[in-house]
Image 1 (tube, rainbow, N blue to C red):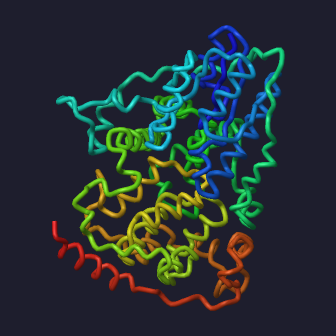
Image 2: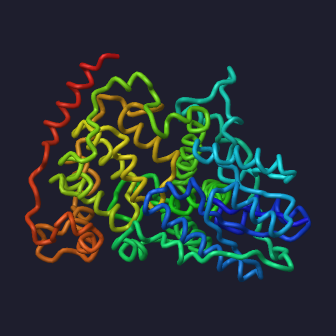
Image 3: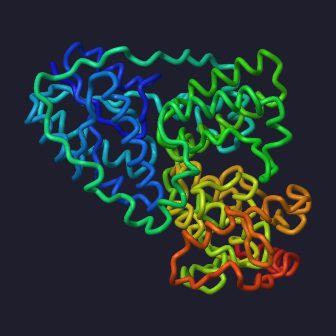
Length: 469
């Protein structure tokens, strides 16, 4: 019996339950990647990055004597076409949890089962299924700390090895070509700038984990907040596309914890923070597009996408070095340091009184590690409208934060060219990636702040205190 492995955000061979389940059916396995209606809606960088990851998986499959079939179209239609061409009787795929993917998967499962096809999702994207973590009263968790305490001592199954062989069909179905999809078009000039900063594929993901465990985890708790130093794992990119499994990362962290690495528990907590984001997305899917705390619907955030202040924020021209360095790091690398994400989100939603959805959409367009759950929870945490959110009266001061976490200004100097006699190569690359319509040059004067740190804080506090809820 031929089985289709519907490849999604599980671009790996090791510890891949969906792939192993497909092989376990006993017949040929056809790996199939679909550029479907959900993926077509992704932002420029995530869509392009998904394509890069699928190309790396294609090479890994070919090394095992298998192939990756590429098709473009509505998921159910494509699956039916491939089933008709191959006589496949089963489809296996990794389970998804965000509302767009859930809606697609429900339609696919219903349609295929009506056709007599054995279509099933398999867990593998998370450590815990969202419905498996409950309070004593049977409710879902709305605060992270008790969520962590509930799961921290749970047994996590050991990762499974990659298969040594994937059974192939006698005749392969036709495959489209990745280059014909032109997934880099929306990136414009940015694709060639961003590409060297990425670590694409399962081997690169494992190398990142090995480096982190060998060199950084001992000081992770103390160094992860300093954006100028390599203190984090950078695995968010690979976890987002399933190039490494959360179980592999978690068990590596557990080993480090048992060996006495000081930062290991903090690393495990960050992995579980990702779980908490999906826990919330599953139970309250409105979090990805609307205020989780619905009373915040009445808050008078500005929603003008084309406002001059919003453009300055996107361009890294706010006159606030921490904010500008972070926004340029994002545009050049497809990544932004986590401390910097909190600063730029607080600045947009509080100093500029702009709706978090505008920032969420910009990150969705620019992040190589874009994840619908983590992105939504992060923005609503910063804005104050989400669960487990920062209190409304906590307004990060981007000036004092720079003094605290980038005292030498190494981070700011790396990413801001204006006003520097010899700008860094990274700072200059921003002008290679930025749209020509922005008219930006490295020899232009650095702008004054569009709003003062204390002025913006007081304006935000006044608005919060006057809120009508």
